Image 1 (cartoon, helix red, strand yellow):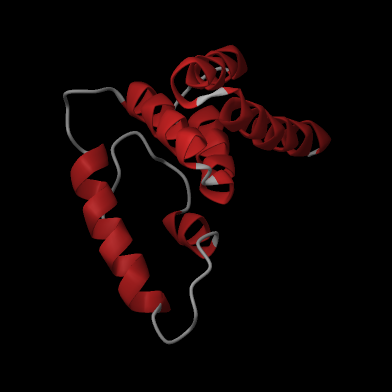
Image 2 (tube, one colour):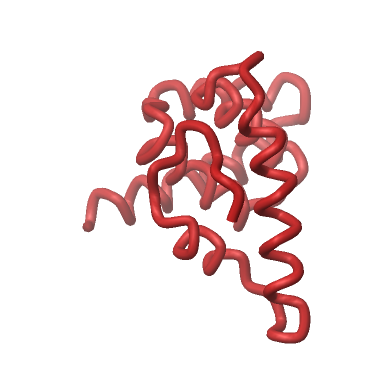
Length: 118
């Protein structure tokens, strides 16, 4: 996988969280790795800011499985705080509506609970 600036974790473990059918798994992992590496490797935003922006986008789109992955990544790899994550989700309520933010908070709470239990 292409290296992602600020990400020191196990790239294979990260990719395994993205469930693809075996018929396309390798191709999709390579594609995502290449594209993510290009975008996340840009210097214009820090990895933490890019992580928070990604969480906001995923929340407003209702992409909760991916949001959970990025919440964990933000906390464990990019130095994002729980307070910052909650503030970003709260801000989504203004522009995407309260239902989107409430659903986002449910996802965030599940990730926080999982991390607290580990």
